[in-house]
Amino acid sequence: MAVFPALCEVFELTLDGSAPENDPIDMVRRSGEVEFEKWKHVGNRRVNGVQTLRFKLVAIGSCDHYNLAEAILKEHGRIPEGQWCEALIAKFPDTDGKGTVGIADDSWRDQYNDFFFPCIRANDGPTCVLFFDWAFGGFNNHWRWLVEVDQRGPGTDAAAELEPALGRRHHAARDEQRAVRRVAVAHAVEVDPDA
Image 1: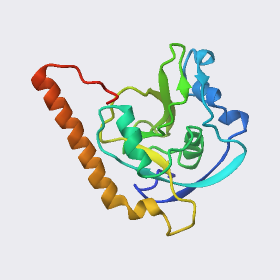
Image 2: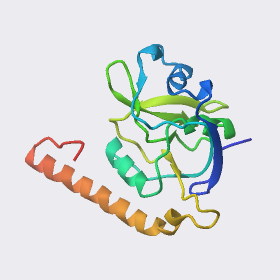
Image 3: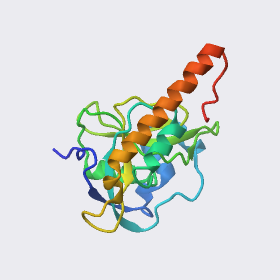
C-alpha cells in the first residue's frame, strides 16, 4: 500500500506542471465538479515544466478560518501550488483513514467568484480522491497540510529545527483567537473573520 508519509517526514514529489492532465481547470473537471468550465484559475501560482521538490505533511490543529490556517502553515514552510495535489495522489494513491490533506492555494474561483483550494479525501474508500474546498470555512484537527521544505538538502530543513517554537506561536495565535471570540460574545458584537 502506498499511503501518505508520517507527519513532518520529508519526501520528494515530481510534477510536470505543463502536462495537460495537470492543468488547474482539468483538475476541477476530474474532481467531479459539474460546471467546471465556469471555473477559473487566477494569479501566477502555477507549476511550469517538470519539477522535483521536497515536501512534508503537517498538522496545525483546529482553525476557525482559512486565513488563520494559511498564516500558521507559512511558518512550517512554503505553501506550494495546488497542482502538487496531482503528484501527491500519484505517489500515494491509497487512503489511510487519517484525515483530509489540503494545499492552502486558493487560486481557484467558481462561477460565483468564491475562493477554493485543492484537497485530497483520504478517509473513505480504497483510493484517494481530489476535491475542492471553500476557502472561507474552518478546519478540524484531522486536517493535514502539504508544505514545501527547504531545498538545501537532507538534514538541513530549517523549519524542522523551528518546530517547537512554531508550536508555541500556533498555540498563542489560537489562544488570541479564542479571547477575541469570548470578548465578542460578552459584548454581543460580530467578529470580523479576517481579523
